[in-house]
Structure formats: structure tokens, C-alpha cells
Image (cartoon, rainbow, N blue to C red; front, side, top):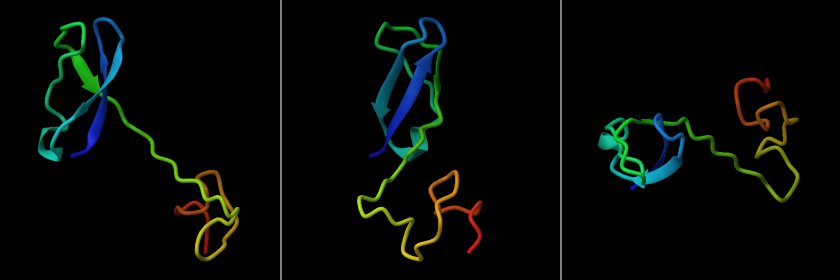
Length: 72
């Protein structure tokens, strides 16, 4: 089950909830009890310890070399 990050619009607290993907956009209640929380866009980053930019060993771009912004 994925973990989603939310921010309460009332008290600005950021918190996480584990829930099924089907419920990702459902409302969430913050730990303080406020019902006005919105889901945040979480960013995931993977870093290689080998120093290469990926299987093709392309140069790293602003997104790490594994996206469409680096031709190749």
C-alpha cells in the first residue's frame, strides 16, 4: 500500500497516510483533527553509488539523466 503526503490547510501540518491507490485523492484528516487536508506531490529520487547516469551511461541532466530532457 503506498504512502501519500498531505498538508493541512488549517494548521499547515504535513503528514503521511498509507492507503490504497483508489483512495489517494480522498480527503484526509490531519493529526490535529482538521478535515481540510490536500495531497502533496511527492518527489522520489534514486541515486546510484557507482557514479554512472544509468545503464546507457549517458551524461546526467537536470533530472539525473534518466528522463526525456537528456537525449540519447
